[in-house]
Length: 179
Image (tube, rainbow, N blue to C red):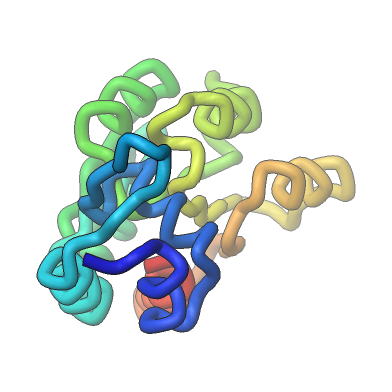
């Protein structure tokens, strides 16, 4: 067994980052009676292998539907990931809580839904608030929208139209950064 700080040195991250992975159940650990955590070396090795294998991640696509969301889903599938589509904010929150996706891709230009309220709700929901977000829009973000994107901690932004390869590159970049 090793401490979160020792695991952090192995992973080249802080001990606090390791504790966040423990709290969000990404890395198994045991809490001792004194309040400290211990990580089994085998669990850390499995965690490292999972971080290196960026395939088969569940990615939640939040969009009203249509050809645009299908295009995103196909790009996600080509990468070996599993796209899960939610067509409205309520559906998105239910699926996110059940599936714990590796990434949210949300269209902030959805008609009939306030995507910004949904993003704030995601950031306030305990077990999904740290999941990275990729924002997709049909227009350039206004200053207020850019401020909101920064405030919620969005990891990336894509403006339509875009090529499938651009989506794949952005997803890969975000997953490498956070996993």
